Image (cartoon, rainbow, N blue to C red; front, side, top):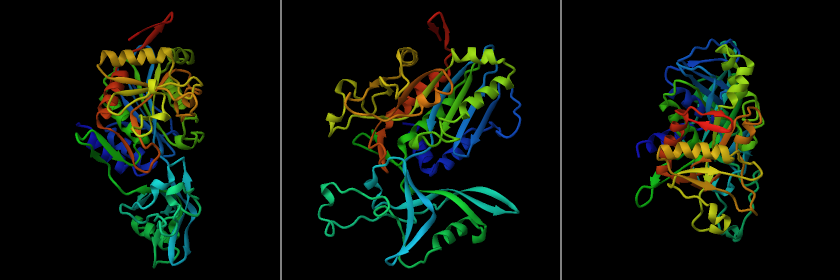
Amino acid sequence: MKHIEECLTFIHDSSSMFHAVENVKKKCVNFIELSEGERWQLEKGKSYIVTRNHSSVIAFTIGKYMDDLAFNICASHTDSPTFKLKANGEVEANHALKGNVEAYGGMIMNTWLDRPLRLAGRVCIRRNGKIEEVLYDSKTAVCSIPNVAIHMNRKLNDGYVYNPQNDMMPLFSSTLKKGALKKRICEDLNIREEDYISSDLYLVVDEKGKVFGLQDEFFSSPKIDNLESVYTTLMAFLNSTNERRVNIFAAFDNEEVGSNTKQGADSSFLEDVMRRIQKGLNYTYEEYLMSLSHSMMLSVDNAHALHYNHPEFYDGNNAVYMNEGVVIKSNANQQYTSDAVSVALFTEICRKNDVPYQFFVNRSDVRGGSTLGNISTSHVSIKSIDIGCAQLAMHSSVECAGVEDIEHMIHACTAFYDSNIHEKDHQWEF
């Protein structure tokens, strides 16, 4: 499939949420970069991009032949569960230089053991009398978290409970002393140690994704949740040629920890951008409110494929499978935003464009996960549906998904971006 290698490269190069945003910007060639701290001058027929915290990004294109204001939005998230280096992140003990880390998000903890790990994120430094934010990636594996041997813990396979403070501290060196990690980072950045101020640095599995299976039908990679969605929605956004809408690509940070940050889906970021577009194009506030009834959002975050060894965890009538199409996620308690109208609109788009789709609903006695759709639409009241690609091993340090679903998602989201939905008297037309 033509997009699989590019998707795997995008994921590998997006070693932190900051790198993911930078890679989005690189793909948005000839987009005009905006700053939230400056006035915006917008024109029909132009494309723009803006970031917040350098870990969330919104890109948008304004149709050349727009009459009424309306928005087509795809939203995903840039973060994944990992471990973050603490402020005092180096510990010297027992002939080892260890990293002092804390868990970010809800990972499958034991999958982080015995893997080569990089360190990546951002560092704030002093340069030329100013404070500057720079990206950092160690590029090579600098640590690992070795398991305790089975000989020392005979009950390890009986259900060991990992303590993040004791069990998950990575090994950096057996000979170097405290301060060696900071020195390495400063050498990589070509700065003096006294110019290092602060950082947001995370552990990254030093492994590029690979295709596998007897027919090369699956792929294995870190961060599939949710960088696969970032990649597929971005490709769809860039493929679209809708001249009568404002198309928006949004990728938020901090979904894995609740989204309630200044750059998360629970922030004002999306609404701020939409309101500035309205104002920049000289539409009235009432026209903006009118536009919301003709607008729609796809909340794109991956879904749980049926696990072939444990079908008992699923509602068999609403289970989904890798490589069998875009997953539509529903929940009676509105953990997902899908409802009859948004499902009807999206499935009609898929039907007209020959995109396969399937439905996921959790077992009634199992509490499922949540995502950013219902959070975003609490700020911007538009129709929304939660979709994703089916995957296995969600929140493992290395996950698994279907190769064909990359194409399915790009095709579906491109068709959505090219659509022109309008509502009148409870009837919708495209």
